[in-house]
Image (cartoon, rainbow over all chains, first blue to last red; front, side, top):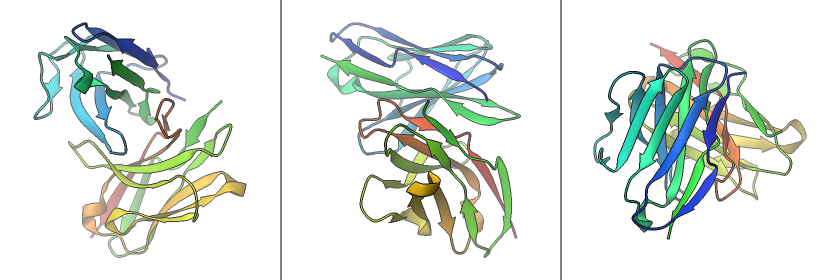
Length: 114
Length: 113
């Protein structure tokens, strides 16, 4: 089935640094990918919709300058958490939709900012 | 390898009819199990989760799910579907800290008047 690869699976970074998370569709082309953030014991919150070749669409309340999204090709979207702070520590997950097979989610990235 | 299977990509039911969405998983140990719903343009909302204990789990919006270890299944049910239930439903399995959460491909529910 459709596969989405997300890396890294976990990362620890110092406060003030930036972290990049990659989301790749391995066997299909994804013109649209989605980035979610999950807080402990809560639902996944949609952060933004990543559109290949154009600007991402951010959900209300999501800081565009802090969470930079780039979707430069049909198989790769990246989320960069800039100037990370401890409150950015969370679980981030991407997904992509293959029209013939439904949504596929990455395995997620656990970000810890110390 | 861990995997989650939702066999039905699309289901259509009449309003007022009962609903069952299937979910099967393959996991090394007994995982934590989740059902999420995503309405158009919105993020994923947690309907219910199973960690341990009673295998019949009650969730929000009148949904319930039953964990059957022997069948490696966690099917979602609702006795009477409302038009507002039309959405995409995702089954997920993982560990409590979500370091390795896997999602099914989703089942799109259409509700006929």
